[in-house]
Length: 283
Image (cartoon, rainbow, N blue to C red; front, top):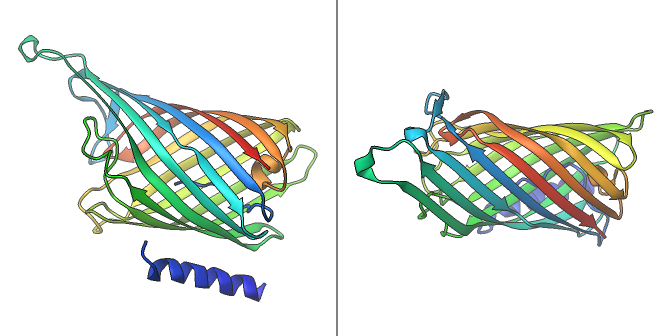
C-alpha cells in the first residue's frame, strides 16, 4: 500500500513538472483490460443563466440546439492504474425567431472537433471503499472558439480529482460515487472546482437505474471568462453482459444507457436540457 501511495504522488508531481474529459467512477480496470464508450448527447435550450445566475429567455426568442459526440477509451496498465483517452466533436444550431422585419432572418450553424483528452486514474484503496486519484489534460484543437455559434472557450486545462465509490451487496444492490478536485485553465478562462455525485441500484441484474449531479464551481479571480453550472441527469442502463461491471469494471461487459439531463443552475451558460445515449464495452 505504501508503494501505491508513493507512485500516486510521483505521478501527480510529474504531471505538473512535464509539459502538459469527465471520466467518472473511482474503479480502475483489471490489468490489460480495455473499456470503450461511444457517448452521444443532444441538447436544446430557450434560456440562459446570466452573470447574476438568473434564468433569462434568450435574446429575440432564440432557440439553440447542440449535438456532442465523445468516444472514450481506457486501458488497464495494472490492476490499479488505468490510462484514459478521448476526444469530442460538437455541432451547434442557433436561430432567432423574433426579429424586426428590416433585419431579416438569422440562423447559424457550426461544427468542429473541439478537444482531445489524455489522463490516468490510480487506485490507492480497494476496501472498505474504493479510493482513487485521477489526472486529465485536455487540449483544445483551436477549431471551436472561432465559430458562430461558438463551440468552446478555446482553452487547455489540467484537472486533478479525488474519487470515492462503493457497491453495497444488499438484497437490492446499490452503489454511490463522488468526485471533486481542481481544474487549471489557460487563455483567460477562470479555474474551477469540479464536483460529481452519482448513485443507483439494480432492481434486476440486467438493469441499473441511476442518477447524478455533475458540474463546476468557478474560482473567482483566476480569469476573465467566468462560467459555472450544475446538471442533474437520470436514466437506465441496460446491462447485456457483466452485471455490476458497468460500475465496478471488474470484467467483461456490454451496456447501453440513456439519460435525461437538465442544467438547473449556472452562470454565463445555457440552461440546457439534454438527452444522452451511451454504448460501452469492456474486454
